[in-house]
Image (cartoon, rainbow, N blue to C red):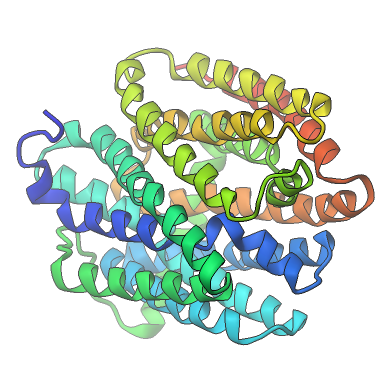
Length: 396
């Protein structure tokens, strides 16, 4: 069966929000092209996207502690509302500095979601004594979002041909508003911390932040998982170059939508296949997939126009593998995190990754302008060596 007993009863609001997110994410295949059409350099685009990551780094711990000390549900809903507003404002401005500010606010919004959403779901399932649904949630959430993304780029391609990329930002913002409404009305929060006064809340936030940071540093498996995820993310530090690279290889702009639709199908297939590996040595599975990604990225050096189909296949395999890796890693990660600091520890993982990737992306932006997407994408794969080293150090 596709769903286990009572799985939909417990998780349908979350699954629905993932589908709506995927369906409304029409802007993703065209985002970098949108900014290039505004005559921004790769470095300027990197500054804009890094502003998002820096903001997430600055606010991950306070908002994660807010979720642990006040409410995971209201944290997620608030984050969606903030992000929705920003998505609708972005196409109304073309000023570089205004866009930096808006992306920083979007980063703030997503920190209210990051960590809190996973902690909310996991603790709900634990309350119902359904730990068997942990891995199912990570598989289904990813595959349901990917199912929406199958259709989103196709619709987006039509809108781009008929109207413009700008319209897709409004669709994206509406999706976040709709998700905020669904989770506010239908999402149940079974783990609720004791209500505390404002001053006490700030003190509790500070204490939870210290506890979360200390736990993340001292727990060897969690620490290695965080380091491994950082280096794995750095492999894709030149990601802003993928869309322009495809166009350089003679791919039509509207075809980017088809590319992302195919990617979504592959992610669904690989997510479900992760069920077969959940009882294996996770570190070995992840290390093998990272090694394959490294080889695929380096092979980009051999591709020239008009062979964009070869590059498209590599793009799909590299990004599609997250459909296999993420459910395995997140299920494994939550095995070691205590309930009371679940959101804050998850936020620490996201925070560390965001800071390093943000700083690296600024450097990558300059390199993209100087050397072009092909070389930056290819040599970024070498960070996989350090990711593999950290994952193989895990002993459990």
